[in-house]
Image 1: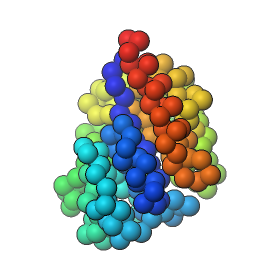
Image 2 (image 1 turned 135 degrees about the vertical axis):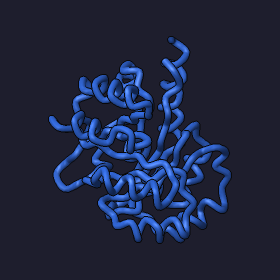
Image 3 (image 1 turned 90 degrees about the vertical axis):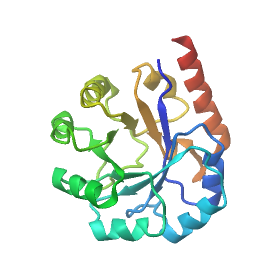
Image 4 (image 1 turned 30 degrees about the vertical axis):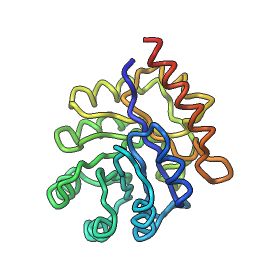
Length: 217
C-alpha cells in the first residue's frame, strides 16, 4: 500500500501543536466550530508562530459556518485547507473555494445516503473525510462506522480524483485493521489523546503500524 495521508485534528493547546509538529502527520487540524476542542483563531496564530511544522498543512474545521466567519478566521490564521464538517451545500462549497482560493474538503457522515452525497460534490470538493454521526455530535465522538463501507467511498473518491480520509474511532488498537482497506488516509483526534492531551507515545505507536503496513506491500 502507498503511504496514507495522516491528519491529526482537534489540537487545542500549544502543547498539542508541539507534539503533532514532531509527528509524521501531513495535516494538523484545528476546530473553529462549537466543540470541546474549539480554539480561538488568535491563539492558533500564536502557537503556529512558535513551532516549525516542516511541510505539514493546516486544516480549519467549520460546521455550517457563515462565509464571513470563515473570512474572520483566515484573517488571523493561515490555513491550507478548509474542512466543512456539517450539512453544507454544493453551492456553499463553491462559494468558499471562489472566495478563499483554498482547497475545501467535505465531510460525509456515513449513512445509507453517504455515497450519494459524495457523488453530489463531484468536481467541487477537493477531498473528503468520512466520519461517524453520533447523536448531536458532528465528530470527535471516538465511534467508528461500519468499515466494510470504506471501499465504496474510496472508489468514488478515486473516480473523482481526490483523496478520501477515514475518521471516527480510530486509535492504536485498530489502526492495523483500518490500513488493510488500503485507504487514502486517516483523520484522528481523540484516538491520539491521553487525558485530553495529544500523546507522543500513542502517535508513535500508530505511525509504527503505518510504517509496518507500508513496508509489507
